[in-house]
Amino acid sequence: MSINGIIEDFEFLDDWEDRYRYVIELGKALEPLSESERTDLNKVNGCVSQVWLSSKVDKSDPDFPHLKFVGDSDAHIVRGLIAILFAIFSNRSAEEIMKTDPVTTFSQLGLKEHLTPQRSNGLFSMVDRIKRDARNALEPA
Image 1 (cartoon, rainbow, N blue to C red):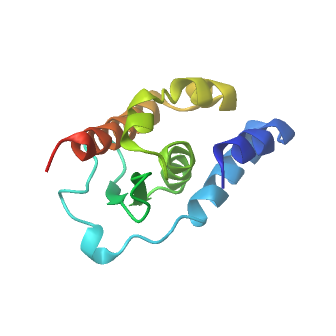
Image 2 (cartoon, one colour):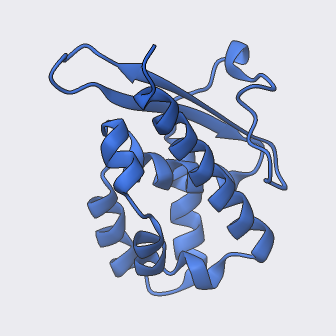
Image 3 (tube, rainbow, N blue to C red):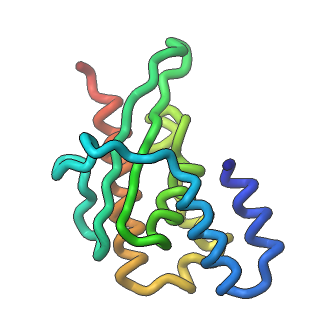
């Protein structure tokens, strides 16, 4: 799902209980994370729940190398937040990821106002991790 599609869907949902249910549904649609990717290296620090993120640089189109992400969490809401982050960042070049500020999107969705401080910290830890992976992809081999 695209981030624009998620934003449009959010606009149709009037109350936050419906929006939370929608976020959980987004999480259920995530590509499964293999057991081999549930490592300490892929674990995101700073999240109250357990979160794993794995990224790969896709060079199948040499004119547009981009990053792809897979991830998972043991918390349903957090899985949905991962899905939203992937809609923002996945299939973008490392340069685009570094220039993207998701705070505007979080504000548009109302996430900044409706997440607990712990979940907000975890969300920003996931963003930091995605940007770190993008920065690493920019470094020469």
